[in-house]
Structures are given as C-alpha cells and as structure tokens.
Image 1 (tube, rainbow, N blue to C red):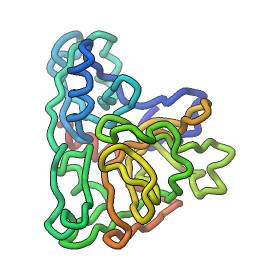
Image 2: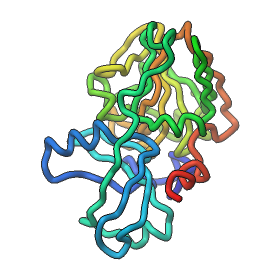
Image 3: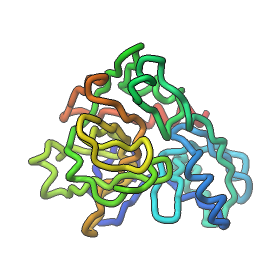
Length: 245
C-alpha cells in the first residue's frame, strides 16, 4: 500500500501507508497527536532502522495515533516498539492578516508543505484544487472531536463513491467538505469549507469511512475550490520524499 493507491482497493479497516506512532503515557500521547503536523520529520531512535528519517503523514483519533510515512526500504526494517522522535512544527501557524481577520485557519500541516500542494494563499483569499467536494452530512466519526488531534471519517465506499464523484479517490488526495467548521471541535457550520488530506482507506463499520486529516478551514467567501475528479490532486511520493532526504 502506498500514496496514490485507491482507498477502495483494500479489504481493510482504515489501512494506511503510514506507521502508527503512539506514546505509552496518555497525556504525552495527546500532546504528540496535537502538535505533530503533515511534513514534520520523524527520526527512528533505535532498532534496525536507527538514525533514518520519515515524515508525518496524518493522524487518527480514538486515543491518539500519528501516522508516519517511511520509504518502503526503511519501512521493511521497522518493528513494533522501535522508538521514534517527532519534531513538531506548524500547529498554531497564522494566515495573512485579512484571512486571519475572517477566522480562516490552517492546522495540522507544516507551512513548508503548503508550498508543495495545489494551494495558493493570497492576502485575502485561498485558491485550492481538490479531487472532490462533499457535504458535511457524509462525515461520521470525528464530529464533535478536536480536529488538531482527530481525523474526519468520510462515509463513502466503492459502491457509493461514483455517484459522489469520488470513484477515483486515492491516498494523498485533497478533499473538500462543505458546511463544516473544524477550527475547534469539528461540527456543522453553514458557509464554511474544510480541506483535508486523505490518509487512510475506507472502513466497513457504520459511521466510519475514508480518513481525512483537516489542514484548512475557510469561510466560503474567502475560498475558491476547484474540483478535478480525474486527477490525483494533493500529496505525492515526491513531496513526501523531499521532506525525508
């Protein structure tokens, strides 16, 4: 499994190309999940892969898990229990003055990654290309949860995806969710759009689905969202690799 693979190609429960990173102390685990951002470097501190680097791909909810991507040759050398260190950077970053004034927010992403994604941040507006756009009614697990520590589950599967324009959805795609505000606890808010990165496959469980980590939350009047359903739009292996080397 890798970035660019279909989220519907695996008979699995929230499968991801990332390695799950946790901390045995729950308070530290919440801190790890809250501060880790897409693009942050992850150093392996012990085991057969000691000294090599990966990069934060995303996060999952429940008690808190960070998903860290490593190149396949490194991933094959990792075993459960290998210690790693995440250099958190990016949480709390502010958008330019006019966007900040209207409440737009960037979250869960190292600012350096934004320059490598199809996202253009101007003085007063944000332009973003996405693979698809869905309504907030499709969001299950993640509603009411803190989006700095949790992903959103888009309730879609291989049977329902084509009618929603998501038949080609792959890991790493950017996806927009209309009428949802994730700046604090995720919830319905008319006139706001959240953009996230697809970090896990779908799930067979009711209320669950494709894992989407939010990275932007913007009022509609300050955002231009272009849907490109036929392209892989978002995070690529080249982008991830550039933050590892």
